[in-house]
Image (tube, rainbow, N blue to C red):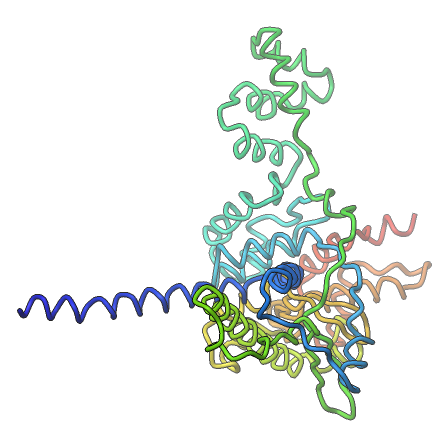
Length: 414
C-alpha cells in the first residue's frame, strides 16, 4: 500500500519537473534567437497558428518606431563572427583575453601581436594567452588568428584534412621551395610521387591563406532591429519592434474542441515566451543605453565607456548567461544608424578607463591631423595621448597603429 502511494506521489512531480524544464529550454531558445531569426520564426508562427495575431499599432509611438526602425543593411564583420563564438566557448578571464586577441586580428585574419606582447599588455600569464589563442584558432573561418600564411594553412589542414600528412609536410618544411619553385619541386624535395604531389596540390588549392577577407567583402543582409533607441529631453526612449505586438485571438477556450484547445494552449504559451523575451531584452537595452548615454547622443564610438556583461547582469539582477543570450545577434536602430547591441559592451584598454576602439580612433585622428613636414613617431603619439589622460607604452601605440593599417612615421613621409 505504501509503495503504491509512493508511486502515485512521484508521477506528478516528475511530469511537472519535465514540463518546467521543457518550458525553460523553449524560453531560452527564443531569447537566444538573433533579431533576424526571431522575426522569421514569428512570421511562420503567425501563418501556422490561428490563435496568434499581430496587433495593429496606432498612435504617435508607432510612427516614431517606424521612422527609426528602417531595416538598415548590416554587414557582419570578422570581429562579429569571432566574438559570437568566443561568447559560447569562454567566460570570465578567458573571455577578456580572447576579446583582446580578436581585437588584434587584422582584416586578413592574422594575429598582429605576439602572445608575449598580449600577456604583457594584459598583465597575465603567457600560458593563459596561448590557451585562449588555441581555442580561437579552432573558430570559423578555419585558419584565423594565425601569424603567417603558412601557419594559417597548417591550421586549416589540421581542422579540415587532419590525415593529409604530405600536404602538411610541404607547408611545414617546404614553404620556401613552394613559393619559389612550385608544387612539383616542393613535393620532389620530400620524395613524393607524382600522384602524391597532385593530390597535395588539390588539397592546398582548396584552402585560403587569407581567411578573414571573405568577411571584408561579404554581401550585406537585411536585418530587422530589436528596438529603436534615442534620447529626448535628457530621457532615454526605447521603442521595441512591432514584431513584439503579438497577442492571443480573443476567443473563449471552452468553445473549442480537444485538438483546437491544445493548439490554443500552445499559442498562449508562445505569446508568454515572446513577452518574456521582450521584457528581458528591453530591460537590458535600457541598462546598456544608460551606461552608454553619451554614445547614443553623439553616435561617436569614442564616447563608449568600458562595460562588461557582468556589469549589466548585476544591474539587471540576473545571471550573466541571460545577458549573453539577450544581446547575441540583436541590433538597435539609433538616430546615428544601426548598431549591434553587443558592440556597446566596450572593454577598457589596460589602465585607461576608455574603450580600446575609442583609443584606436584617437590614434587615427592624431595621425590624420599631423603636419606633412612633421610626421609623428609612435613616441610622439604616445605623448599626445598622455595629454588626453591615456597612458600607453610606445610598443602598444605601434601595435594599435598597425591594426589601423597606418605606416610608421618614416614611411608616411615618403
